[in-house]
Image 1 (cartoon, each protein chain N blue to C red):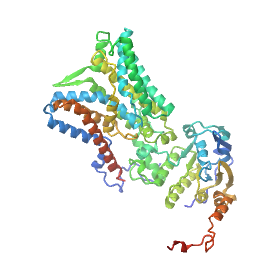
Image 2: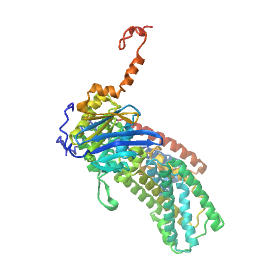
Image 3: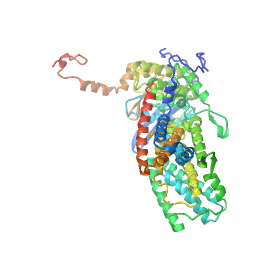
Image 4: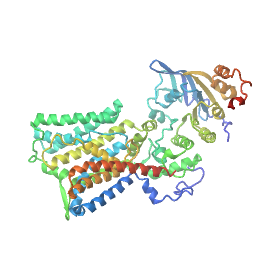
Length: 286
Length: 349
């Protein structure tokens, strides 16, 4: 499934799940993020695109509750809020899957799956982990996402990057997240694995979640995204919906537009026999 | 909830080669220490005639228990990614507080014992609080506490008693009952078993239960393995760390009371250097020095190795000066073995 045909977004009339209006964040005298606006609706994927240092991580940290914003408003389901810590964000249904995935490599998959929200049984001093349920649920939930794990007891560090990403997404979906924030889910992955991960992202969207997809790959973003916000040096350099932008335009803006033109000019080989893009085969001969 | 209709509880997978019992065994953190313990046992069984006598068993277990009571919570702390260098002198501090409070306030010794519990837990809370507040390495924080407690132990004792040891509290009210709890022994056949062995067994059992079967245990592994990840998924990292230091403090209190009630006076300079022995026992038992991996049972095996070595040398009628050499060699061997075993276990994938 290519996931280009998004299902009709539900209750677009209602307030957005998450809405940022002119949000800014300063670290001392450094403007990490200034006047950024973003909307996340249920059953939609909002992509945040930007180069390194554009402020994507800061944006994530504000939505995930790791940092508080300094200016502007953050609305969650129409209600103005400041998130005080990650737990607060989780309790409001915002689950974040970080680039490092927030997994503990030496711990078994099932312990990682439930980390921080472990089910227990019994009471008093005999209150204990419901190990059986944890193992079975982990297995079943991963299977539902199409990951057939060999052994839930293996340390999560032994899984591939794509598998780990999917475990993290499955975890967020299982714990009833309404908004899923994904930080560069395809950054370190090969083409095939990226495809697999994007499939799970689309699956999460189809399950009715609002997704924030942070990436610097416009091709991946355009495949699944409904809205696109471009960040550049901490400021918003563009905001589009899928209808009003083409992949080429997105790529061009993402790559820096006019900067790219200049770069291609700089990279041009002055005395090259061919034109730009030609193969200077002669250079290789000793 | 399984959309694919596959029964969730299928315990086997055709792609899994039969997990051989040996492989499972290799995956246990304690394995290296168990192998080491057997080797040490065989070694002393051969070189020391009296090592295998029933009476020796009680002696060895007693030596192991005094270390093991502390090694269990220290192991948990190390799995949680931190050190406690103040653990050794904290035992002495705890004993001194009981003794001096009881003597000075002329109260029932149980009052002193209780006050000591509160103050010792206070030390643990101080370590944990300083660590989580300042975010300095626990090595530095607890090194500071270690030096401060060493100074306080000597300073206060001299100030109050005029000498380096406390006054005898043997004839005070409650002494006999407290001695029963902390320093009695029972005899089974020829074997004299000290009550500390029971304390030790109980602490190891509780530590293992906490580690493997409670939410807190899951958090300990996570905080030690990757504390940022733990925080991001909502694990209360600070509370977990402080809890671990409180655990060490509690065990220090138990050990301290044993120290006091075994005799009826306490030498204020004792305990220095023991903190390293606790850490060694935990490391021999399979705890990763970087955190996130290990077991409480391993720490018990480490303590048994310690007990066998320290007493075995005596039974073999060697000069006890050799003990430290053996301990060091054991530490190196055990760590190498652990590293090798873990590599083998993780290389299965």
